[in-house]
Image 1 (cartoon, rainbow, N blue to C red):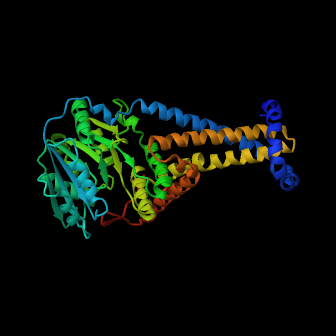
Image 2 (tube, rainbow, N blue to C red):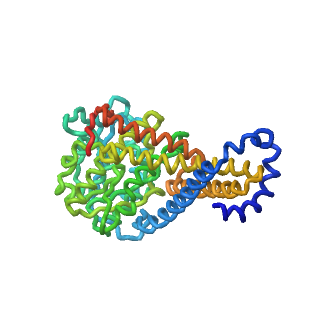
Image 3 (cartoon, helix red, strand yellow):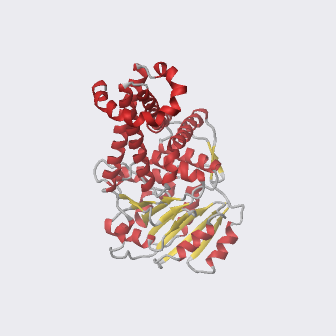
Length: 432
């Protein structure tokens, strides 16, 4: 670090000093000797170097992953898949999104389908809004379900009820808050047919209408993708099984042979349970990037988002307290500590240059490079999720919130705090 400063310091000092001198001199000069000591400088410099490399690794990793993730557009030029498609949608108090769901399905280029809405213990106006939006279309059916067995998760039971009435050779389980481009389902069926998958899943774009969606959701989604890299879910060897419950497309025979939703009846993330279980029995799985044709409006409040993502992260970590702690620590170090250290290195380095400290010039350069590397990686993450780039500015703060959710999830597991989801409460036991 010292030898580098002999080159960088004289170059950067004439540039920085005239800018910061009028502002910093009266305040900082008397105390700089105390603040920028050898230990502080080398500590911030070391963390900044690590942050630079971490940002580069993330950028390279994303670039590599993109080459191995199929896109939904891949199905546009494939032969259409024959057979009836049955779409099953569990709906518990979905008045907020049910009309958009019905209209989006009826606008699909795929015409040979039936859609079965399972109104699961609804207490709002979901039914009336559904009937009005369907406008008598004979392809739209609904079942009113008023109970759930105690040993079943609510969503799994609703899906089972719908699947029992389904007639199609293909079964698609999706959510009421999913919105599809008109050619989404046809393309996905063509991919499933061409790749001969037993279960084909899609990852869509999350909505970013509210400030908490724009700021917090990209970090939470990245934490989950860090646990389950999508490109590794498509590998033939050493596969990391993953599926997204917002779009689960099964061949009917494979679904029934595996045991249907009864095989995952108590899972709060039935998608991961299907992926792990079917992978273990050597069924063929696949995951497709559908961020340009599928949008999901998951939450309409910060409270709902926190509860939902805490549940997802708990299940994503396999209900293991140590994995939640590990994910929280990793996120804290990379997304909170590194940016703060880079900012501190830049500011203190600039002030040190004014005071004639050549080593401080190197520190300022390292701090600036660390911030540039980190936010380039964060910007790329936002771009891949179709999230507003402006939200990346608050990334360290958002990461601190998600760290809190991870640690709170560990606390809930440890203390057996009930999780409420889909009209039921679940007390989860931690696993080792």
